Image: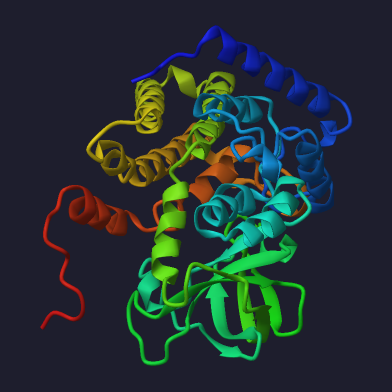
Length: 393
């Protein structure tokens, strides 16, 4: 397992850090430290385009599509420096980390040439059309349907939890294209423009007061017949492959964000005296140990290995970070005490650590609940019998 970086890689780190510091201390200083996913969307669109112009937007992609063909180590380094610099959360995270890699893996040459460069340039933002009201963790239960009509696919149905759909230009949609099919069979993976008749996006207000999630309705929406990844009926395989990209290089950037949050908790504990409480100190130490273990685990996953060991290890990551961050949120609100229940900002908006507590309550639910994650680990990694499906009398 590789836990360090070469002199050449450290030189790359210095280059990336210098560029980020220059931009975030200069023309984009107003975006530094923004953690809300919906704040300043117009300025963050400009930031996406600036990243693209400097070819920092999708550095792991081939140069032909707007990337730098960066090595895995370089991708990890940039992800870490991006978070360390306090750069804003990526408005096009879904396009860069999920849609793009999936198009690279399953798209035709024509699709790659047409769809990838605008993502890399920061010109087209994407969102995800997976979950439905009765198909959250059970994605195979989707009911959104689509059918061919001339040279188009016509789409009817509803998706929910479509993060940042209100700012997106495209959405990838898992839809049932074979009438009468059930479960993972008969699904297709369609690429759909949002700005068209038949697509309606409605924000969902969260407990934090933010509204990054949306309901997205399709009422006769259309997309060209060429906008399908894989073959008709192959949607399940494409969708599952996409989920694998969630456990890639972005995990290291996520952990740098966690580092910033834990440091904020420690500063608050020192400032208000909570650090003198031996139980609080013990919980801070436990959080520090957990964060370091996650880093080593992520580096191990990304270092490669044989016999499928890395793939199996990667299945544990979501439940690990979600449980850790939920505990961090609880620690944050305990450090703040009663002050954490009082809104600090306009409209009684909560501060950073109070928002961390509220948001982290969802970490063990979205992206697959902890129960679902345990089933995945048991069935796919350990080869244990599948959990019984359906009602048990």
